Length: 116
Image (cartoon, rainbow, N blue to C red; front, side):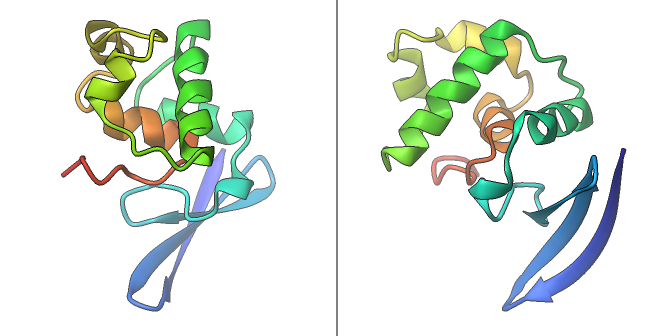
């Protein structure tokens, strides 16, 4: 169960969420502001908020996204589709209505610049 508290840091509104007793800070769009706060419980909570039931295929994508983020490689749908991890069609099926936005949010990484 999550509860929310809002505060402002610089010009960004931060939402402090408590997920299973752990404080997690998110921006106004729901993305984590500190990747070190991510764990599988956080991912599962965010996925439920997005109406997604995580499967092993989702976790494959999440691990790939986190690996790319840690390597400081910019994320795009095209690169993910060419990764060999998932096709673009499957990415859309796994994370409908905004696959890159939803998948990165669940993975705990910042919203990619390629997302509007």
